[in-house]
Amino acid sequence: QVQLVESGGGLVQAGGSLRLSCAASGHTFRRSGMGWFRQAPGKEREFVAAISWSGGYTLADSVKDRFTISRDNAKNTVYLRMNSLKPEDTAVYYCAADLNGIATMTGRLDAFNSWGQGTQVTVSA
Image (cartoon, rainbow, N blue to C red):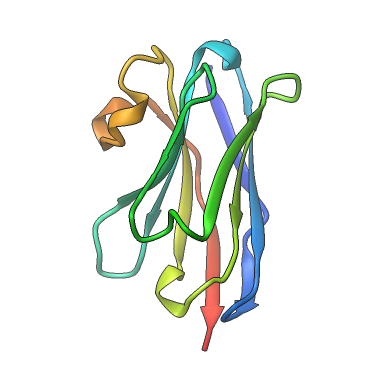
């Protein structure tokens, strides 16, 4: 059974930084694409960042100059480093796995088979 556990969320002032972590278990992590999505109150879940099994990555336009995604296959963990945070970044952030590693870079929600429970990020003005 695939399990994804996010951590690292919290309350931060605008301009601050956070690093989210997602610890994965129950599948072959190194063969999986991984992604981060977020959902703000009253809005649809949206793509933030994705990293393929081979290390290629893509970021949403709204975050590409501020966020980075990385993975540590030895630790079965994917990270999202968030700098220069803005109030509009406030959302629940979800980690997701593309277990087949095929469509990761599309950033489509339906490309990801397994989801974590989410971690809240709140950015105050």
